[in-house]
Amino acid sequence: MSNLISWDKVMDTAMAMPLVKVNRDSFLIESFESYGNSSSLTNKRPIDLYDKDIVNKVAKSVINGHLIKATGTSTAAGIPGGLTMFATVPADLAQFYWHAIVCSQKLAYIYGYPSLLDENKNVNEETRNHITLFIGVMLGAGAASKAVTEVSKNLAVQVAKRLPQKALTKTSYYPVVKSVGKWIGMSVTKTTFSKGVSKIVPILGGVVSGGLTYATFKPMSKRLQTHLENDMEYHNTNVHHFTFEETIFDEQNETSKTDSENPQINLEMISLMVCINMSKIDFDLDQAEIDLITTLIEESNLTNDEKMVLLDNLRVKDLFKIDLNPFKENELYSIALIENLTAVMHADSIIKPSEKIYFNKIASELGFTREQINDFFESLKP
Image (cartoon, rainbow, N blue to C red; front, side):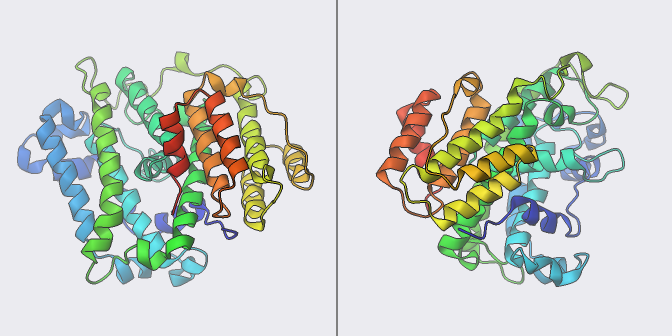
């Protein structure tokens, strides 16, 4: 897995395709038109107007619609820069995630999310952060699922015209989004190299292979739908309806700490230290592990000095002494750490006894049960 497929590159390519941005109001009005009163969805959630069966029916229709759509060549032709965009990301992979990105936006709106686009109806960094979490849920990332649920809880108590985006950029959510993005890249790379893109990603052009599509896209979409449906209980409250005149974020809830004062700033450093230890724990540092760890360090938000400390440590046999106390009271970060550690452990496709022992030790110290540890251990197997 030396050629790590970056989630940012996959998303960049998919986001450059036509019709990737979903306008919340027009989509919901059209989707619920046959059930009446859909024009009211400009300032209300579907669950405020329709019963759960109708909401789920529309969601199922969206998923099935993406299963049968053929975008293929016509979509690729509309990409700015043409087919040269696929130099680093396979075309079928980008098209597959185009569908996942579009479908995730639609499902989010159906289950109560305000618009994910900015004031000019464009995609910004906050939009990408939310999409990353949705794709993470689709692929089974526990940290993404936990983060999406936390956002749903925030939405339930906030009166907003759009998603409270500061929650992902100004507080503890943002590093988790970065961690989930790295995990997605590892997961996509592992699956791609172990089975071949053509076998696990359907080329959505012409006649779509029903078997391949149902084996990949439908389970992913269904996983996100189920998660959002379960979280809908947080939205299904009669206390508030969000309107365009109301504030988008309760400033009293925003942390007043600077980055230097925020104790979570070191969590990324600690997480990378644990991953480096995992790569060296068997005293046989594989090139695939070196490449993966180097990529994780280079793409991190650490300072250059911190990155150099980590890169230099790859050249020595000594392991870092790790203090996991900062993680023990933070389930979200603990899950993200374990998922990244799992990916590193699977990097060379060979699980050594020492790696499994170290993995169990870290997971146990973080408070995970034996069943949860087994689930994490199996998560990235080909």
